[in-house]
Image (tube, rainbow, N blue to C red; front, side, top):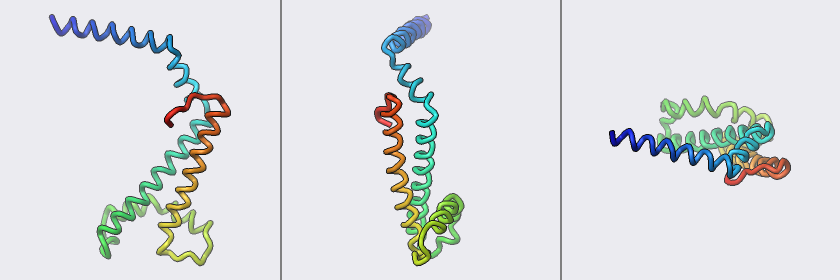
Length: 136
């Protein structure tokens, strides 16, 4: 009996909260931000670059911890599969005199600068379309 009263009170307060959120216009900001295809594309690209950079960092850390036996390490080989397209792309666009030992560092720095450019692009899209993109 008491629990039913608590649930009814929680349901009433939830409805009141929804009503207040709708009146305040916060839902309007969320809808506007997610209805912009440019913002979505830039955010998705930024997320992919972040995942790729974190995979490179994890591969480097596992390689450092496993030492010379890194080629036999399952986790290291799994990260090699994930980061292989990045290595191929950076090898294609980089000069030939960059050694293979330094390709991981080159990949990370290129991803870092792409990430910075995507942050700038995301803020540009937010400001040019007058979106409420705070904290993103």
